[in-house]
Structures are given as structure tokens and as C-alpha cells.
Image (tube, rainbow, N blue to C red; front, side, top):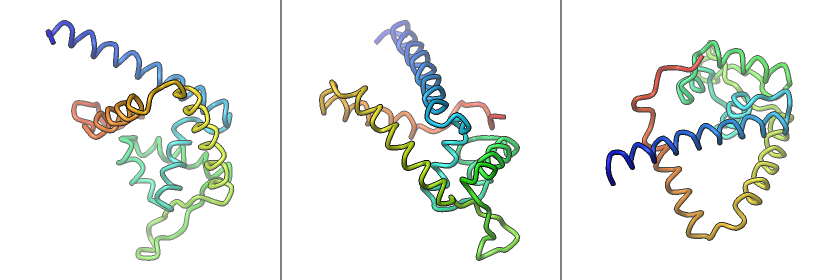
Length: 151
């Protein structure tokens, strides 16, 4: 592959990932208007881990601590997460999903999965396997060359 062809491919990938991100934000807004995509993502992480610190969220998603703080405050206001003292260090607060948070995430994830199933219904099993492997490989490449925390 020539450098020009490689550059063209990388440019296409960048454009398509940007379009994907925009659609994801729009879809998140439709599923729960009060839950922006960042908040949804943080809630999903909190549910998956069954509790984590805000600093863990900031580090994992390369977000500024103030951004995480605002998003978590919104989740708390909606009654989707709550803070509890860390059993090992009572000075530390751990974020846990509430029952409402668990329920909202479960129903939202079911809707999102159905949308993906519909969009990908005509793809062969081999194409899906390759696409999944490419996404995993891309995300595993980490954050090399990316800017610092997002504010």
C-alpha cells in the first residue's frame, strides 16, 4: 500500500469514526434525554465494576476530574448512582449504581443491542468477527498520541 493510499484510508477511518460518535450521541439522547453519552458511559462503567471511584473513571476515560465530577453529580441528581464510603478507607467515596441506575442501563443496553442487531443483520458471521477483532485491536492500541484529559 502506498503512503497516499494509506493516508486516504486513515482519513476515511477518522471521518467514519467521527460520524459513528455523532450517531452514538444522538442515539443516547433519544434513549434518555437527560443522560448524555458521557454520563451513560460512566454509568455503564460503574455498573460493570459494581462500584468505582471518580478518579478511576477519569483515568480510564482520559477525562478531566472536573468533567467526571459534573457528570457524576448529574447521575446522582437523577438517582442513578450513589456514593458510599470505601470499606477499606472511609475517607474515599466509591460510586455505586442504584437500583434505578441498574434498571435504566439494562433497558438502554437492550435497546442499543437491538439497534446494532438490526443494523448488522445483513453482515456475515465472518464480517462481524473481523469487524469485532478490528475494533478490539484499535481500542487495545491505547491512547498513544492522543491529547491529555478531555474537559
